[in-house]
Length: 243
Image (tube, rainbow, N blue to C red):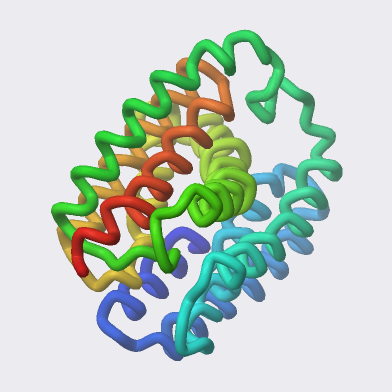
């Protein structure tokens, strides 16, 4: 039920019904709370992760409340998500392996691969959405600020939410292939704000690759690098080509 409500909410957002979409996501948070109480604390990890997705979407849609989105506003919106994420991680007593941060040496070795894949994703996504840049110019200082936000706020939050918390629970209940596919569909649906079918398909494809990468390597740094480089190139470099 929570997955269905999330997808319905995203469908409404895609259709331009932001208020209804947020309402459905808020309803999902309430539904999950009822489910958690009904389960009496048993096997609630999956519904907790799904509730966080709705919280993320409700917070994320606060973008619509400001006339101009800046990287500082993005940092605030994503930064808020650290609170529930940390609460769930601590409550579930997740270890370094569970979070994908156990092998530092391997993380360093995978960084170039992540950067290459992230750049390729950015080029593909730019062809679909032709977005504007999020910084006033492509100076070193502006790119550094953008990189900090995209790495430590956007990429880390999305990596933890989708691939550390949600995907393993879906894999445990539905199997590897189904778990990765369901996660990728939800990840893709969360890009409904673009109102672009091709962007939804691209994000779903990206979710499959990220999900498979995390499952095979159990390395959060790889996922974070791909997400971060994609956003840095897309919103900090390619975005200037639309001017």
